[in-house]
Length: 235
Image (cartoon, rainbow, N blue to C red):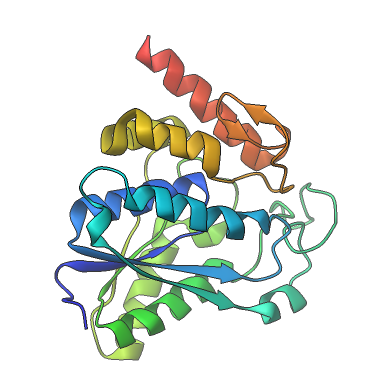
């Protein structure tokens, strides 16, 4: 069993944000484990990419020895109860609620709850997630208030303290690129560009300066915008 003071469990999808969060955790904790989820996501290619990214991070710098076991949970029920553009072949637009059709109701709430259950068994009291409200896409389960309230509920439900760290919560995508450079330099930036996956359409045939993707879905547009802004800040 790991030491709760020096260990963390990272929600790791294989995307840009969770990769930066995993790198952040490796820099801050002595032992880091990861958890991923298979829920019928349209961009399921991320499940293949996450293993590639993990393997490369394990060889990056002197933090690789801190990377512990990985778990992938199969949550088909989330797809069966969701009617969204991330779990169905439907158009990415805005619903009558004003939320993007990529919003999967309850996704982060479920992910964090399952992660907490695994962390409890592993003796870990810190979860790390890539939620961010600065580049707010309209997802209510990415808000800091939501995450911290859930942390309180989980702690009560487990009768053990459970902290949820969100290193990206108050920075934009340009700041995420900058944090990656600070954590792992050009090597980490290259991993993010070449191996992480963000595109909602699951496109890994079109390569851009910022990585692979269709270039037109909201996830690609946000990633590209952050890259451009970060590049301009460097000059």
